[in-house]
Structures are given as C-alpha cells and as structure tokens.
Image (cartoon, rainbow, N blue to C red):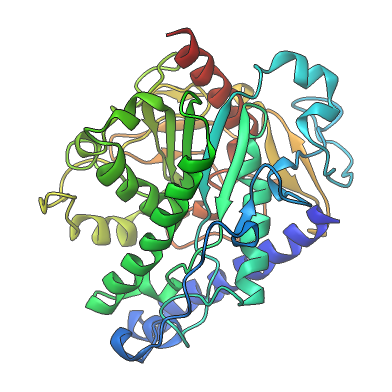
Length: 394
C-alpha cells in the first residue's frame, strides 16, 4: 500500500530530522556538519552519470508512467471538521471520485514538479540515480505533494542528481557546485518536458524545498523576460524563502496577491506558534538574490494557502483538508478544518499551536517545513484549479 509506505518513510525522515535537531541543540552546529556534510571535496567526488530524460525511466511521474505516484488521492474523512476513524489511504485517481471530478476543471495543464531533498548521505555531494533509499523517498513525496495538482493537469516529475542534505549546512563552495549539478539535471528535464508538451498547453511549475530552489532558478533563467512566461498559469515555489523585493522581481512573474490571480507565484514557510525562525532567517539574511543583492531585512513571500491571498489570515474552518496519519503512522485520511493559517510581518505562515492530529516531530523553532504540502493539500488543489481557470479565461 503506497500510503503505508509513505508514512513509514516520512517517519524515518522525521526521526532523522529530530535526531539532527537534538544534536544541533545539544552538541553544536559543528557536529551537524560532521554528520551530514561530505568531507570529500566536490572536485574529488566523481559525479554519477547524468540522466537522459528521453528515457521514461528517468521520470518519477509522467503521463505514460506505469504505477504513476502523482495520480494518488487520499481517502476523505467521513465528516468534515470531525475526527474520523482512520482508514487506509487509497491510490485512486481523481477520475475515481465522480463528485470531485465534477467540481474540478478539465485537466488541461502540464505540471512540472521538482521533489525536495531525499538524499541524506555524506558519501557524495550529489545523489547517484541508482540510490534506492533516496529514490523511494522521492517517489513518495511526489505521491503526496505533486498529487495536489493531478486534477488539473498531467504531472511530470524528474529524477535528478539532487544535492545531499549536508549541502544546506555549509557555506563551502562545494555546496554551490553540488546545487549547480543538480540544477543542470532539472534544466535538462525541463527542456525535455517542453519538447513533449503542446505549445498551447498552460504550464504549472511546482516544487518543495530544494525542488523549489531549482524551480526559482529555472524561472530566473528560462521564464523571466521570455515568451514562455505567457504560458505559466502559476508557480508554486513552496518551502523555499523568496524575498518579495530581491527575488520575486527577477523570476518573470509577480507574487500572487489575490486568490483570483493567475500567472503569479505562490510561496510560504510553515511554522507553529510560538515560532522561532532564528536559524532559518540567519541563513536567509546572509544570502544574496539572483543579482547579488543581500536579502537581509526583506520579508519572504507569504501567500496564505487557505485564502490564496498574500499576507492575510484564515481560521481552521477554511482548511479543506490536511493529510493526517493515524496514531500508528500506518494509514492516513484527508481531514478538513484542522489547521488555521496567517501570514505575519516576518513573512512566515503561522499555523497556530502544533496540530494535535499531526506527528509532533518538527524542525527547530517549530518549523513545519516537512508538512508544507500535507497541511494544506486540499486547498492547494483548489487554488491550482482556480488559478488555471482564471488563466484560461484570460
């Protein structure tokens, strides 16, 4: 059962993150770097062979893929806003639910999705394409994240030589080289995606975490100032901070400020309260945007997934559905009305107290980064449909 495997993998990842967070708090950042940052220099690390994206096997999801993880949809809890007895999540497509299918627009978009970091080893700066553990994790993230878009388009999600998690724990130039290699794969996949998608087809760009980093760079280099920008119905750059003033103006699309807007960028960073983004913001403030200008003192973009508007707030009753595991972390349901959301002055998306129905394992500072999609899965689904309809009407 895909849902069972997903929750098991998520549990392993969370436990690794918790262990890392505990070490960070108790033993110092140096030990985190020892645990996750490769000791070998990038130039000495023989890069694994690059993918040929003409090969269907180099895609986690594409329209003709067998056992396509991107067509997954969760089982809906029987009563909205009420606790439900856990049931196994299904692996049906959106067409298997007539009520839902009737409420969604025709699947006319092409979706290019880049998965988050799933390679946790320090033996290489970039994941070998044949690494089974990171590959399995990537499949399951595509299943539970990219699936939010499967009602409005066919999802393409490439395998790529992602940078290892330790890349984000060091300022060494090796980290930049690792990210550049990973981005080269994403760029090659995107070019193959465009070759296979009709030129009149609207495009949704989406990613999470490292995947969003690559999507943002892709937009700066391939969307901004190019005719392709006119085909982008929306870009979901989630779980990666985008400065409103430094990054967004260079990505070729404006920030989404209202729910009925298309051709714009959606982004947020999820934190429970009290939120302490000190670690995140220290790295953010020390970084520079595409033009080399410092991001320090500029707020990240926060588009509220419950409303589709930038900078506002919404109560939990506006949440159409969160993917929730049961107490044993072996099954999951989609439950509505659990999690509120509000954008604060720092550019964070605050979700109130730690959701009681969700696993209590989070990153330091009440950072719910792992659950950026899961918390708002049904609202992301609705948001994408609304923005695509607006785009096609326009």
